[in-house]
Length: 123
Length: 182
Ligand SMILES: Nc1ncnc2c1ncn2[C@@H]1O[C@H](COP(=O)(O)OP(=O)(O)OP(=O)(O)O)[C@@H](O)[C@H]1O
Ligand SMILES: [Mg+2]
Image (cartoon, rainbow over all chains, first blue to last red; front, side, top):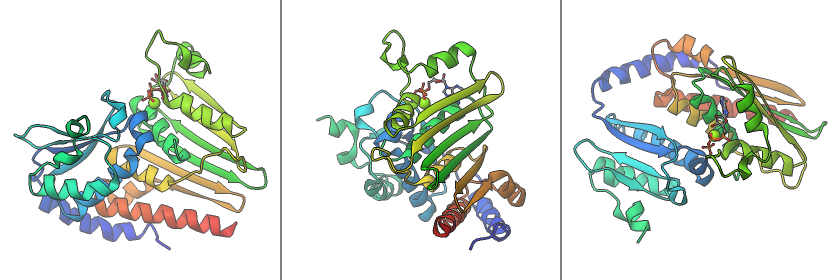
């Protein structure tokens, strides 16, 4: 069984990681819609999957944050990816399964997954 | 909503919108009393008597004159369809408590679902806030408080990946231990 004392050791490790990461955040944001419509459609596992994937790949420049209802409830869960200097990309009907590909193609390699965008879903 | 833990996440979003700094979530599962009770308490801005009346009004959602919220009506509907009810208490400037009670064995009661996922999503998005999670069954209870984690962590935020993962594991193990005592 885990004990709170383990946090002491994790603290030292996290501190070291934080120092490495210092100043590396470049404003890249993954914005997950967390209003009632988003949560009902499955935003929670999507958010947790983004956070886990970004941590696993050590994408130190990326922040995962939330927003409210952006008025396209039928496309929830909606995720906006904002990379500085690039146009905003809005993904719709995102599932945890789609997250790994969005992270790999878009956040790591800079190629938005056109197939998963709201613009494409509206076609 | 497919799981009640998603309603809890949604109701906690109201607390965050109300500028709460501490949110307590609780689950009481009693087989002997055939009850499931879910609670969300915050120290946010609270509501005026008039706001509270509006939010309590079960027909509130049928009004079309103003933008209406979905969160509380959905949670109330889930409770009432499972032989229970929803109560809201709020004091302006002090905070709000939302409690939903369900008949545990009611066929229309949605599953509780992933409460740990709800707590970890809340911590990930709001590392500056404090959360208390309390889970009670007929055989015992478990409580976790991010303030006691913070005491150990110092300046390290709760949403550091390793820390969130540890918290998830800690909650999962303790809730499982409670359930296996049943
Ligand atoms: N914890 C709280 N503290 C203060 N005010 C609250 C709280 N919970 C609810 N309210 C008030 O009650 C209203 C209705 O809440 P409800 O969750 O039903 O809808 P909403 O949050 O406005 O929209 P939605 O949930 O559909 O995204 C809120 O807009 C807010 O004014
Ligand atoms: Mg709400």
